[in-house]
Length: 444
Image (cartoon, rainbow, N blue to C red):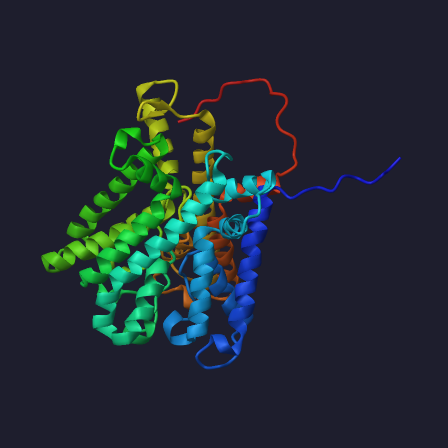
């Protein structure tokens, strides 16, 4: 009689985490090479690991200015890592396997379903092909749209700038190449009044952040909104509210002294970029306290499920709001657009909210204690990290080792998803088969 135990297989969540970690390590090693830096010298592993983590997790926080420190090889490698991280490591790998003619196994389809947040396992291979194809097409169109403005401003080098910023914007990464032209870590502050750059980048960020499933609804049903799935309706309506509302605030509250045209462009960009692109066209340290808190709020919300964006997701906030409305109205079940929301979705949304707040607040408290910096400034950095945004008040390049490690952990957790990590850790545990006695507890 054999005593060998059956070999335990990795769950789909564990495979996703290992895939992201493997690509990050691969990128960090290549970025260390002398060919990756403009100086031709080896780069410390700590700096390359942070950069690779930020690129794969499509965050945009940096400890080395991308344009002035990295060579064209290094910039190209960072762009490659952004592309892989934006689409999803698993989605890219299985897309390649699919187009090569290999039939995907049930396990591979399950991994792909979790990787791109597909609702069902059926048709997930077709969805991945559609997603990757659309990503490359939209990025190409975005680059073409950016070409005239960048080439007029910077000549032939504008071609590389257009392609780099198109991919970075669509993947909601926030990496830029303006440091050697308008000052290190300056992002797009010198181009904030240029509509030929601001508007295409805003559109790329929005399209990249609404998710693959919403794209498919738009493709299948065009502008017949009532035929969209409930999730697509929630994504589009919530995204519109989260752009228009903050835009009005920024227009009147932060940019009151600017000419009207510049106020509109700056307000639009600042309402779009926190969810979760990481570019900025303004000096964020000059914002009021209310303005910075609004940005933190937008960063933590992020984009939508199955998109290139991070954060808690628009649907999470919508579900929580719908549940709160249900309680106020003394209804039994939360509803949106005439559809009942599952109790499990409400529980998951509540868990995600608690998890993101805990990570951002705890990380900020530790960094503040280690570095002797104001808590609110540290909360801005940790909120940006865990939501994979990349906006910064300029603290990140000067942080010590412990603080950088905290930011890397937050970026990684924010990209793979907090629930993914929890499910990976609890994989193999038996499901609940019994219930404890019920007893009421008063809340509120």
